[in-house]
Structures are given as structure tokens and as C-alpha cells.
Image (cartoon, rainbow, N blue to C red; front, side):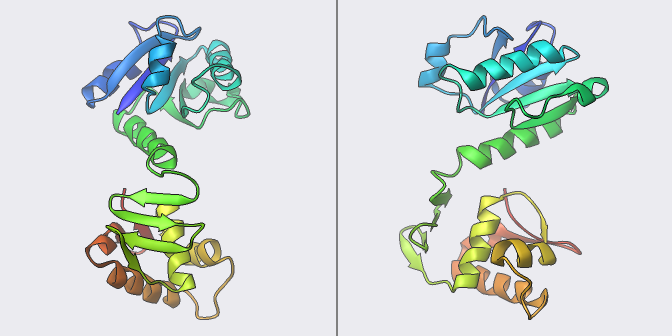
Amino acid sequence: MRAVVLTSEPEAGAVAPALVELGCRVTLGRFDLGGLDVAELTVRPPTVIVVEAADDIQRAQRAIKRIRDEGPLVEIPVLIAVSVARLSALDFSIGFDDFVLLPLVPAELYARMRQLDWRTATFGSDEVLKIENLVIDIAGYEVRIAGRRIELTHQEFELLRYLAQHRGRVFTREALLERAWGYRYAGGTRTVDIHVRRVRSKLGDVGAMIETVRNVGYKMRS
């Protein structure tokens, strides 16, 4: 995973060393984008831009606004790292995609970066979801595994689509009833279990990506 880290003091930040330790390739820059080869980043865009605000909220937010308002990095997901003490000062309308708290927990930072990656790069477009050799064509209402078409009912397709669009998130049976199918199904939550079993069976080995979370519900493995 490739990350750009923007901070007021590139040599003194906590985010970049943590990402390097986690195996990420990191490019350091300042809030004014100084130190970055923007042309190179346009050709080889990073997975995410992490803005390490710490207590310098105003300059960090100006950096995010600049990224969102102009330039070739506008489509890159932005994660802001902010101190617990300054969280209440954060303006959630400026266009960042997620935030992480400082002092930093490296595993949480990496997990949030991966989640942003799944929301954007993992899926080819809003119309086609691609997960390994599983392809879900939303517009064409079609599912294929390694090119082989899989026949699903309407409810099976919608269940698979919803879980795939929210990989890594756990949903209760009640939530899947309402969000995947858009209404409270008369059969109750038991029908979710039945449809999950059917989808898993039809997907074969790929069906193992749909995991049961004991005493909670289901998720699509990340």
C-alpha cells in the first residue's frame, strides 16, 4: 500500500514511521504540498493521503481543502489524524473521508486505510464490483466467478451485492433485512440465514468470503 503523509514537521511526525513499520511505502510532504512530486503522484497515485493534523487543525484543514478544490490529487481518499483534545474543532464538511485519533494506534490506522482502499480502488466502478475472481455486475444484474455465470434470485443477488459493497463491516440480520432488501421481510431474520446458506452454496469455494460473526450476523471477508 502506498501513502502520502502531510504534516507540519515531516521528520517529527508519528504517522509515517508507523506506516513504514507496517510495510507501507510512504511519501512525506508538508501541508502546502511542499516536498511532493505532484506530477509523479498523478502517474502513480497513492492509496490514501494521510494528513497528520495533531493539534494544528487549521493548517491541516486548509491542506485538505486545497486537495479537494484543485489539482490532480482530488480523487485520492484523505484520512486525517487528529489529537483527541482537538477532535471537537474538526470541520467534517471539508471533504476528508475518515479520521484516526492521536496518540496513534498503528493497527487502527492501517485498518482505516484499508477500508478506504476497499471503498474506492478495490471495486472497478459503482456498476461492477470485483473481488478476486468474483464479479458482480450491478447494472447487468449478473454474477460471475472466473467468467462462469452464477444464477441468483433477486434477494440472493441483493444480499451479496450489499455485503460486497461494505466489505469488512459486520451487519446484524435485522440490518440486512432492511438495508439489503429495503423492507422488513415477513419471514423474519431467519430468512437471512437461509439466503446466506443458498448464496454460499451457489458460490462454491468463493462463498467462504461471507463469514458468520457469532451472536451478531454476517460480513464479507476483507
